[in-house]
Length: 432
Ligand code: AMP
Image (cartoon, rainbow, N blue to C red; front, top):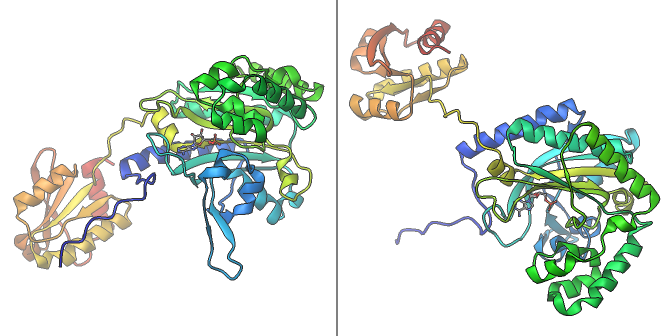
């Protein structure tokens, strides 16, 4: 039979190895700690949702719904159309309604972490499975709720050392003032049709606001001169935005106004923001997070008229923008080296005992020379090597070698029933 070929991962999907995971854990636990201080509770959401949830919440005319969703028909009787979630706000709102949270505590503060799926063109910093940390505040329309989230974000970037992260802010208005602005923008686009790309022609018909989002250089030059939402905000939206900004100024939260900032999802209104990162390799994919207010979304998903505001951070990109802590991975406190098959069982007993006592211990398979095994112990940066050879077995005493000084010490080990004193002894030896 010919040798089977290796099966690669699906394009745009990747593995996160232990060293990177340690970095990610640091970022996640910093977020958890800070969420606790701001009164957020965790919600774990399904990865699969009904397609109609995203079609309705994210918007039929958005890039996500038009071309980026992983959707398929589940093989149940109704052949339900389902989708791997491209984002989690829609799911949070669905859960808020479905689990009754909306009635029990109208004001809810929830955070989530986990993978999202979008069928975008893969490149560095852009994957088809990527990870987000996000937060949602439901039931609050006051500017304080927006400001608190933004303060959380800048404090978080400080904590994880993402020093170059910049906050960009805009207001997208609401249903009272946005339609008139949308029409002004459409008229502007129609007047400059020749200079706009084919995608923009389509956007002009279906969702003119998305013009502002186009990355094509020719379009960007036109859009520079396009009318901005701020000049069309109604009085309540303008007051809301002013109050958010005043609260940010009070807390000395640095931000830049970006009057052309729109978000890729339809549900946003009023406050909208993005966090632009600086970091090795971020390159063109430099948005590490974004969010904003979505006052109409809960009602759009069949619930009461409850406002909301939230954000999502991309963990893959955050990890590029926030340097990993420099602590090198430490090796095990001890590596147990059985020199012959008879020593395997006592070696496992010893390892289990030490691990029960909270020590990181490795155990190697038998069948190699002492020299080879000590080489392994050094490579794995073990502090101590516990040698179990024929002599040791006969005497019921292991040889423990300090790998830094290469000093051998005989340690009395009851190999039948090693006691907790052994763990104490190892601890003193390795100084933990
Ligand atoms: P969005 O709501 O689309 O702005 O996404 C929020 C954040 O998720 C972005 O700022 C990115 O950091 C991250 N993100 C979105 N799409 C991807 C992707 N395809 N690959 C990696 N990260 C992504």
